[in-house]
Length: 394
Image (cartoon, rainbow, N blue to C red; front, side):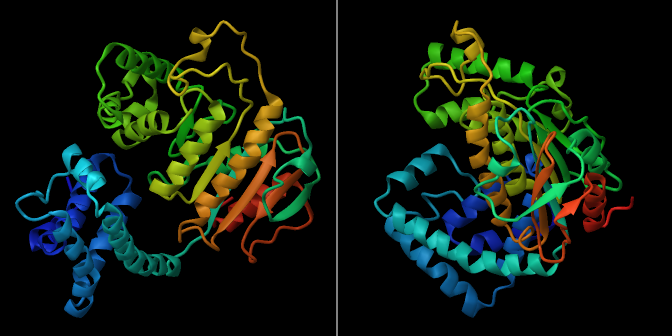
C-alpha cells in the first residue's frame, strides 16, 4: 500500500496527467511498498511531489517529448493500462523500434528532476560513516592495500582490532530503522539490536536451500526465459528457521534479492558482502555501514550453474582457501564500495571512510576536510574521533 503522501497524489489524479509509461513505472515501483525501505518511499514521495508542483509551462515541456515517442510506439490508453506493468509490456518496450528513443526521453526527465532533489538533500546533509574491514590473513601489508584509493595513510600506535575498535561504533543508541548496517563474511562482529546485520555464514541454511531449489527448477522444469525464472526466484522467501531477518519483510526481501540477483553472491562470501553493501547504500541510504570482508575459497571449475550450484556438492576437488585471490578481489571491491557511496547526494562531502585490516598498524582515511585525521593516532582515539564525527555520545 502506498504512503499517505503517495495516496493523496494518486487521488489527486497526478498519475493520469503524466505519460502512461511513466505512470506505469511508478505503480510498478510501489506495488510491493511493504518491502521498500523508508528511503525509497521518501524518494518517490519527493519525486512526484516535485512533479505535482511543476507549473504548466514546466510540466508540458518536460513530458511532451515522451508523449510523442509513446504515440510512435503505439502506447495509448487502450493498449497500455496505467496501473499494471506486466511481462508483456516489458516485451513490448524491448522489441519496439523506438525503444532507444523512449529510454532517452525517460532519462532526460530524471536528468531534470533528480538534480533538484539532490540539491535539497545536500542542504540537509549530515555526517555519515563507512568502515571497510579486511581480514588479517591477506598476504600483503598496508603498503600494498587500498592501492586504487586516494585518501590519507594514518599510522596506528597499536594493531587494529575490529572487536575492540569497531564494535563500540555499532551500539545503536536512538538509531532510526535501517540506519546502521553490519555486512560481514562471517560472524566476527556480534549482531547488535537496532543494527541491520547481514552475515554470509549465518545465512548458510538459506543459501543451501536456494541453490538446491534453483538447480531443481532449471533441470526439471520448462523455464522459458530469464524473466520467467526471475518470477520463480521471487517466490523463494527466507523462512523463519533460516534467520532473524525473516521477521522483517523489508530485510527478508532484500536478502533474497541480494542472494539471487547478484552474480556469485550465493557462493562467494566477499561477492555477497560487496553486493549487499552496494545495494544497502543504493536502497536504504544508511548513515553508518560496516563492511567486513573475509578470506574466500578458491573457485572450482566453472559449470553453467556456477551462480547457483553448491560447489561443495558439485565438485570432488578439495576446498582450499585463496588468500592471494582474496587480495586481488578486494582491491577492486574497495573501489566499488567507495564509488557507490559517492553516487548519492547524501554521502558526497558528508562521509568519512576508514579502510582497515585486522592486526595491521595503518589505516586509510578518505574524509571531508573538517574531519581531522592526524598522521598517527591511537586506534581507540580514532574510534572516539569517529563517534565525535557522527555526534554520538561517548
